[in-house]
Length: 82
Image (tube, rainbow, N blue to C red; front, side, top):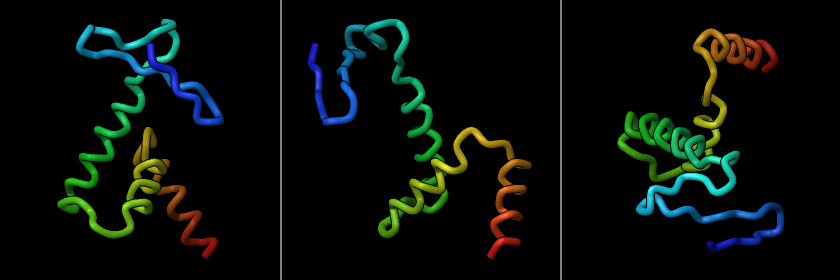
């Protein structure tokens, strides 16, 4: 087992080729894989991005697991504020 210590949390590497997806039965990587799948589908609409990748990534993070009406409500609040 490989353990990384990057100062804020411990990271474990799992081996998908050995049909391993979790070590302790509580922490899974499916969430991050779903987020990246969602993000890649969004970025495909733009044929990828060459500039402002961080902003596109932040927008995907903002949109992640939100309902369309919730997004519209937050956008209107933002527009009214500014």
